[in-house]
Amino acid sequence: MGRRVAALMIDWGLSYLIALWLFGGTDLGILAVFAAEQILLVGTLGYSIGHRLVGISVRRLDGSAPGPLPAIVRTLLLCLVIPAVVFDQDQRGLHDRVMSTILVRM
Image (cartoon, rainbow, N blue to C red; front, side):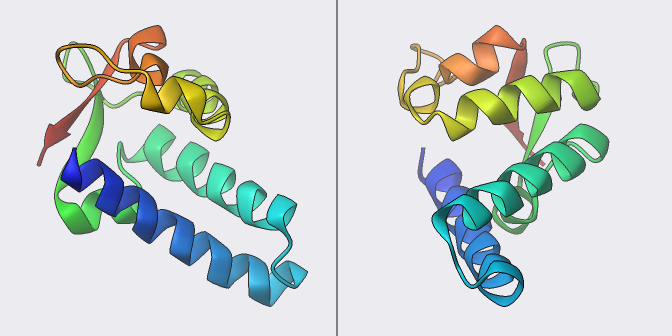
């Protein structure tokens, strides 16, 4: 759980700095930058900047990268916050369960 929180804090902090530079730091700007980072990086590489720095990545249950559609849906659910804090005994958040993804150590 600690790595997830650390990755989220890193991604959110970077999103804040970029949004501050681009949009003056508005809440909607921060969320938009955060969502764009998650969709682009998780969808293509399987990890965000924060994930990479703490050594975790998002994978489908078969071990492959999530791809664009799961990254989009997963990110939208993550931005709603509630699905991310509701998790099962395997520590998979609702946003991961819905898209059949899991966070694994790199």
